[in-house]
Length: 376
Image (cartoon, rainbow, N blue to C red; front, side, top):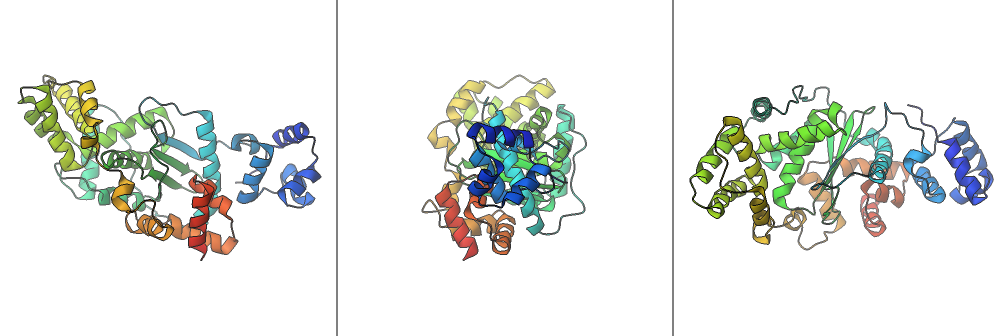
């Protein structure tokens, strides 16, 4: 794909500053001919220069680069509650996607066969059949605990690169970020380690659903299916039956919640996920609802004694980890090829700290530490 800059946006930004192309070239530290070539569409800025160009002219990625819808990065956020994805969120994520493109050349050879889900119906029986088929492919029974290792292995098998990040406790947005590069057929999954263990597995299963349904990524129906699939995969009908029988025999709402909490702990998922799957099971079979409400479940779930530790705290002590420890965990725990690819790119191209900062969406001092570790 031949990318070109948005000439009219650049001309308008230069006019607002009272600059000409020569002044822009001096500000960017490139030749005047380089800027001329960009404006003619015969060349395109390298990633680091593109970042500087955007910063210098205060232009977003969508304003700076002419859109090619067929090849634009496809973005999907794993949000919290009713939070809204804004145009700014999408623009910044697409800019990250554009920066990821040159990194693809340093990844291992892509897989020729991948898992894809064709039936994305939200009907209870169809969804349960889909989840059962995936569990069977993984070689685990319908009542077995689905481990992190099972999920991580599926990402690797389907050319989805996990990028574990520590973005802090994000209470309103971006608990996970999915960037699909359609032309390259590679997906990058950013997973925030600064989140509770009980939520983390659900987010991973949610992102795996996106990997299995690439045509739905970035669409509302894709989000709906990913959430429903994650619940069914982690706590399928057979488990929901046992949990329903146990919880429905309790006399009080508190004791019913206690029964559900036992299943949540055993399967390392949230209390609300268990409650939600049990409620779906009861509704599908026409059974009486449990003696509790979503509000009561949320109130119990949000207590510190139930929520437990953050993923980052279980992996790293003390926090924050040294760069070498963090990078080793990305490879050892998450089987991620992100940092080896990034290291190869930095060493071969001499790419600077700004690239690391932007492609990981982290603070400059953190980017400096990671850059130093990878290039030492």
